Length: 263
Image 1 (cartoon, rainbow, N blue to C red):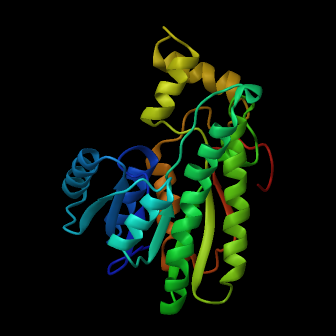
Image 2: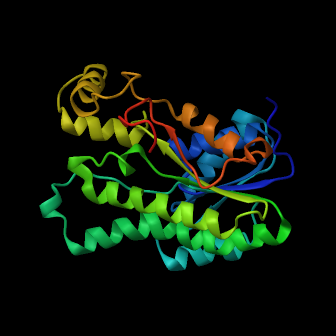
Protein backbone atom coordinates (compact mmCIF):
# COMPACT_ATOMS: atom_id res chain seq x y z
CA UNK A 1 0.00 0.00 0.00
CA UNK A 2 1.45 3.33 -1.08
CA UNK A 3 0.33 6.12 1.24
CA UNK A 4 0.90 9.49 -0.40
CA UNK A 5 -0.08 12.63 1.51
CA UNK A 6 1.74 15.02 -0.79
CA UNK A 7 0.00 18.38 -0.83
CA UNK A 8 -1.83 17.74 2.45
CA UNK A 9 -1.16 19.83 5.54
CA UNK A 10 -1.21 17.90 8.81
CA UNK A 11 -1.28 19.35 12.33
CA UNK A 12 -0.24 17.13 15.23
CA UNK A 13 -0.73 18.60 18.70
CA UNK A 14 1.61 17.65 21.52
CA UNK A 15 4.18 16.53 18.99
CA UNK A 16 7.62 17.56 20.25
CA UNK A 17 8.25 14.05 21.59
CA UNK A 18 6.75 10.61 22.16
CA UNK A 19 3.73 9.37 20.26
CA UNK A 20 2.98 12.80 18.80
CA UNK A 21 6.45 13.15 17.34
CA UNK A 22 6.31 9.62 15.92
CA UNK A 23 2.97 10.41 14.26
CA UNK A 24 4.40 13.61 12.81
CA UNK A 25 7.34 11.64 11.43
CA UNK A 26 5.03 9.05 9.87
CA UNK A 27 2.96 11.76 8.18
CA UNK A 28 6.06 13.59 6.96
CA UNK A 29 7.50 10.40 5.48
CA UNK A 30 4.19 9.98 3.63
CA UNK A 31 4.73 13.41 2.05
CA UNK A 32 2.53 15.65 4.21
CA UNK A 33 3.45 19.21 5.14
CA UNK A 34 3.66 18.74 8.91
CA UNK A 35 3.04 21.33 11.61
CA UNK A 36 4.36 20.42 15.03
CA UNK A 37 2.82 21.86 18.17
CA UNK A 38 3.81 22.22 21.78
CA UNK A 39 4.00 24.85 24.49
CA UNK A 40 7.73 25.57 24.47
CA UNK A 41 9.42 27.47 21.62
CA UNK A 42 12.79 25.82 22.08
CA UNK A 43 11.40 22.30 22.23
CA UNK A 44 9.45 22.98 19.05
CA UNK A 45 12.53 24.35 17.30
CA UNK A 46 14.51 21.27 18.32
CA UNK A 47 11.75 18.90 17.18
CA UNK A 48 11.35 20.68 13.83
CA UNK A 49 15.08 20.41 13.19
CA UNK A 50 15.15 16.76 14.23
CA UNK A 51 12.15 15.86 12.07
CA UNK A 52 13.46 17.69 9.02
CA UNK A 53 16.79 15.91 9.31
CA UNK A 54 15.17 12.50 9.90
CA UNK A 55 12.77 12.70 6.96
CA UNK A 56 14.50 15.06 4.55
CA UNK A 57 11.31 17.11 4.43
CA UNK A 58 11.58 20.82 3.76
CA UNK A 59 7.96 21.37 4.76
CA UNK A 60 8.12 20.93 8.52
CA UNK A 61 7.31 23.79 10.84
CA UNK A 62 6.09 24.38 14.36
CA UNK A 63 3.69 26.60 16.27
CA UNK A 64 3.99 27.21 20.00
CA UNK A 65 0.55 27.28 21.61
CA UNK A 66 -0.98 25.73 24.71
CA UNK A 67 -4.00 23.98 23.19
CA UNK A 68 -5.19 23.08 26.68
CA UNK A 69 -6.49 26.64 26.93
CA UNK A 70 -9.01 28.54 24.82
CA UNK A 71 -6.43 31.27 24.25
CA UNK A 72 -3.82 28.81 23.04
CA UNK A 73 -6.23 27.09 20.67
CA UNK A 74 -7.27 30.46 19.25
CA UNK A 75 -3.62 31.40 18.73
CA UNK A 76 -2.96 28.17 16.87
CA UNK A 77 -5.98 28.44 14.58
CA UNK A 78 -5.16 32.08 13.89
CA UNK A 79 -1.64 31.20 12.75
CA UNK A 80 -2.81 28.06 10.92
CA UNK A 81 -6.35 28.65 9.59
CA UNK A 82 -6.64 25.44 7.55
CA UNK A 83 -5.38 21.85 7.71
CA UNK A 84 -6.29 18.70 5.83
CA UNK A 85 -5.35 16.35 8.65
CA UNK A 86 -5.88 17.14 12.34
CA UNK A 87 -4.36 14.81 14.91
CA UNK A 88 -5.48 15.68 18.44
CA UNK A 89 -2.67 14.12 20.44
CA UNK A 90 -2.04 16.60 23.29
CA UNK A 91 -2.71 15.05 26.67
CA UNK A 92 -1.59 14.63 30.26
CA UNK A 93 -1.63 11.75 32.73
CA UNK A 94 -0.60 11.06 36.31
CA UNK A 95 -1.33 8.39 38.90
CA UNK A 96 -3.52 9.78 41.70
CA UNK A 97 -5.93 7.89 44.01
CA UNK A 98 -9.43 8.69 42.76
CA UNK A 99 -10.75 10.01 46.06
CA UNK A 100 -7.81 12.44 46.31
CA UNK A 101 -8.41 14.16 42.97
CA UNK A 102 -9.56 17.74 43.57
CA UNK A 103 -12.14 19.55 41.45
CA UNK A 104 -9.51 21.69 39.76
CA UNK A 105 -7.63 18.59 38.62
CA UNK A 106 -10.77 17.04 37.11
CA UNK A 107 -11.32 20.30 35.25
CA UNK A 108 -7.69 20.56 34.12
CA UNK A 109 -7.70 17.03 32.72
CA UNK A 110 -10.92 17.71 30.84
CA UNK A 111 -9.54 20.98 29.43
CA UNK A 112 -6.28 19.48 28.20
CA UNK A 113 -7.36 16.00 27.12
CA UNK A 114 -10.86 16.69 25.79
CA UNK A 115 -11.60 20.36 25.15
CA UNK A 116 -8.29 20.88 23.32
CA UNK A 117 -9.41 18.49 20.61
CA UNK A 118 -12.98 19.78 20.58
CA UNK A 119 -11.86 23.37 20.06
CA UNK A 120 -9.55 22.51 17.18
CA UNK A 121 -11.99 20.12 15.52
CA UNK A 122 -14.75 22.72 15.86
CA UNK A 123 -12.60 25.15 13.86
CA UNK A 124 -11.01 22.86 11.29
CA UNK A 125 -13.66 20.24 10.52
CA UNK A 126 -16.29 22.53 8.93
CA UNK A 127 -13.54 24.00 6.76
CA UNK A 128 -12.56 20.48 5.67
CA UNK A 129 -16.19 19.85 4.79
CA UNK A 130 -16.17 22.98 2.67
CA UNK A 131 -13.27 21.55 0.67
CA UNK A 132 -14.80 18.07 0.48
CA UNK A 133 -11.93 16.19 2.16
CA UNK A 134 -10.37 15.89 5.58
CA UNK A 135 -9.21 13.62 8.37
CA UNK A 136 -9.68 14.20 12.10
CA UNK A 137 -8.01 11.79 14.53
CA UNK A 138 -8.37 11.82 18.30
CA UNK A 139 -5.50 9.97 19.97
CA UNK A 140 -7.32 8.36 22.89
CA UNK A 141 -6.19 5.28 24.84
CA UNK A 142 -7.18 1.76 25.78
CA UNK A 143 -7.77 3.40 29.16
CA UNK A 144 -10.98 4.73 27.63
CA UNK A 145 -12.52 1.26 27.74
CA UNK A 146 -10.46 -0.30 30.52
CA UNK A 147 -10.29 2.39 33.20
CA UNK A 148 -7.02 2.30 35.19
CA UNK A 149 -7.74 2.38 38.91
CA UNK A 150 -4.72 4.60 39.51
CA UNK A 151 -5.78 7.15 36.85
CA UNK A 152 -9.58 7.37 36.82
CA UNK A 153 -9.54 11.05 35.82
CA UNK A 154 -7.34 10.20 32.83
CA UNK A 155 -9.57 7.29 31.82
CA UNK A 156 -12.65 9.52 32.07
CA UNK A 157 -11.20 11.99 29.57
CA UNK A 158 -10.23 9.24 27.14
CA UNK A 159 -13.75 7.80 27.25
CA UNK A 160 -15.15 11.26 26.57
CA UNK A 161 -12.99 11.48 23.45
CA UNK A 162 -14.70 8.42 21.99
CA UNK A 163 -18.12 10.03 22.37
CA UNK A 164 -16.93 13.31 20.87
CA UNK A 165 -15.23 11.59 17.95
CA UNK A 166 -18.24 9.43 17.15
CA UNK A 167 -20.65 12.34 17.39
CA UNK A 168 -18.56 14.53 15.12
CA UNK A 169 -18.27 11.71 12.59
CA UNK A 170 -22.06 11.46 12.53
CA UNK A 171 -22.38 15.21 12.02
CA UNK A 172 -20.19 15.16 8.88
CA UNK A 173 -21.51 11.88 7.46
CA UNK A 174 -21.22 11.66 3.69
CA UNK A 175 -19.25 14.89 3.39
CA UNK A 176 -15.81 13.52 2.53
CA UNK A 177 -14.42 14.01 6.03
CA UNK A 178 -13.74 11.17 8.46
CA UNK A 179 -13.41 11.39 12.23
CA UNK A 180 -11.91 8.54 14.23
CA UNK A 181 -10.30 7.74 17.55
CA UNK A 182 -7.12 5.71 17.84
CA UNK A 183 -6.58 3.77 21.08
CA UNK A 184 -2.94 3.12 21.91
CA UNK A 185 -2.02 0.82 24.75
CA UNK A 186 0.94 1.26 27.10
CA UNK A 187 3.66 2.79 24.92
CA UNK A 188 7.37 3.33 25.50
CA UNK A 189 7.63 7.11 25.71
CA UNK A 190 9.72 9.25 28.04
CA UNK A 191 6.64 10.06 30.11
CA UNK A 192 5.63 6.42 30.49
CA UNK A 193 9.20 5.46 31.30
CA UNK A 194 9.26 7.99 34.14
CA UNK A 195 5.82 6.82 35.29
CA UNK A 196 6.98 3.21 35.49
CA UNK A 197 10.21 4.19 37.25
CA UNK A 198 8.06 5.99 39.82
CA UNK A 199 6.05 2.83 40.41
CA UNK A 200 9.18 0.72 40.89
CA UNK A 201 11.90 3.02 42.31
CA UNK A 202 15.41 1.59 42.21
CA UNK A 203 14.46 -1.26 39.86
CA UNK A 204 16.32 -1.46 36.49
CA UNK A 205 13.97 -0.27 33.77
CA UNK A 206 13.94 -3.50 31.77
CA UNK A 207 12.79 -5.31 34.90
CA UNK A 208 10.37 -2.53 35.82
CA UNK A 209 8.80 -2.69 32.34
CA UNK A 210 8.28 -6.43 32.71
CA UNK A 211 6.80 -6.03 36.20
CA UNK A 212 4.47 -3.25 35.05
CA UNK A 213 3.13 -5.27 32.13
CA UNK A 214 2.75 -8.41 34.23
CA UNK A 215 1.18 -6.70 37.24
CA UNK A 216 -0.44 -3.58 35.83
CA UNK A 217 -1.43 -4.68 32.32
CA UNK A 218 -1.60 -8.50 32.52
CA UNK A 219 -4.07 -8.74 29.63
CA UNK A 220 -1.49 -7.51 27.11
CA UNK A 221 -1.08 -9.99 24.29
CA UNK A 222 2.25 -8.42 23.31
CA UNK A 223 3.73 -8.66 26.78
CA UNK A 224 5.76 -5.51 26.15
CA UNK A 225 5.34 -1.79 25.76
CA UNK A 226 4.26 -0.65 22.30
CA UNK A 227 6.73 1.47 20.33
CA UNK A 228 5.59 4.95 19.21
CA UNK A 229 6.18 4.11 15.52
CA UNK A 230 3.60 1.32 15.81
CA UNK A 231 0.99 3.89 16.82
CA UNK A 232 2.12 6.22 14.04
CA UNK A 233 1.63 3.52 11.41
CA UNK A 234 -2.09 3.27 12.17
CA UNK A 235 -2.58 7.04 12.36
CA UNK A 236 -0.80 7.53 9.03
CA UNK A 237 -3.18 5.03 7.43
CA UNK A 238 -6.23 6.69 9.01
CA UNK A 239 -5.00 10.05 7.68
CA UNK A 240 -4.78 8.73 4.13
CA UNK A 241 -7.12 8.30 1.18
CA UNK A 242 -7.02 4.52 1.77
CA UNK A 243 -9.08 4.90 4.97
CA UNK A 244 -12.06 6.54 3.23
CA UNK A 245 -14.52 3.91 4.55
CA UNK A 246 -13.23 4.14 8.12
CA UNK A 247 -15.09 6.76 10.15
CA UNK A 248 -16.77 7.01 13.52
CA UNK A 249 -14.48 4.25 14.73
CA UNK A 250 -12.48 3.53 17.87
CA UNK A 251 -9.43 1.83 16.39
CA UNK A 252 -7.28 -0.20 18.75
CA UNK A 253 -3.51 -0.37 18.59
CA UNK A 254 -3.20 -1.51 22.18
CA UNK A 255 -1.35 -4.80 21.90
CA UNK A 256 -4.51 -6.62 22.99
CA UNK A 257 -4.53 -5.04 26.46
CA UNK A 258 -8.26 -4.30 26.34
CA UNK A 259 -9.82 -7.69 27.01
CA UNK A 260 -12.73 -7.32 24.62
CA UNK A 261 -13.58 -8.04 21.01
CA UNK A 262 -14.69 -4.45 20.34
CA UNK A 263 -13.85 -1.23 22.27
